[in-house]
Image 1: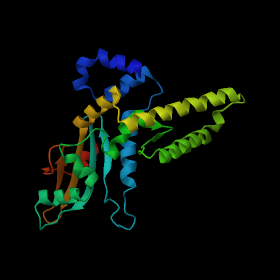
Image 2: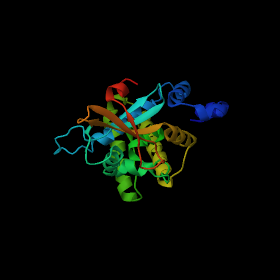
Image 3: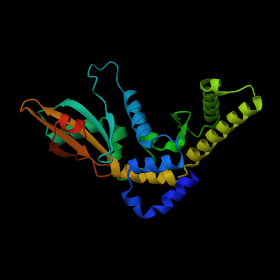
Image 4: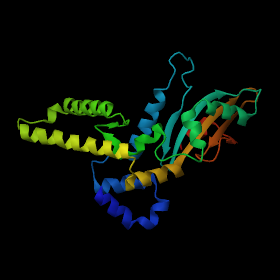
Length: 247
């Protein structure tokens, strides 16, 4: 991480134009085994919304998807296949849909706080332990159980990597305990690393929301578009999902 900080200082004049793709490349130079922020963040975002699906709802597309466009350096969080309600204007209809998802509608508020949106937490790669983004409370006993469970999971999943040398094995486990304790202290104290701050800046530039709407009566398709912190009123344009699919 120190090496990464040096790289960022060297390229500080270009930070304002830095993209997630470039950040992933810089991290790969400092650590060839580093996970892709783009892949991890997008995967976590999709997993978050998949868990929100109401299994009793016959509309399987009644939730949001996450897609990162490297060409545009945009993270799109979008909903598709919604049929327009002809009793309302298109803007009113889209605002009504968005209001049923407070996790998203709150992001339109200018008071959006640092790292507040859980579905974006996969981009904050320093909170990753054993392939999982960790979230802690301020209940120490509960958090302690979570830490112990995660260490036990680590041992179970990596048991074939251990050798006959118990001293080396104990050292591996102790390193993981130190790593998860560091993550715990960071999250509980709400401290911000240089990488966290940079990722937050990139997310502020990159996140966009879309709802695709089919006007069946007039055989037209539209999209309602939002940018975080810019209010609940969408920008509406003629757009088919097929036009967006390959960006």
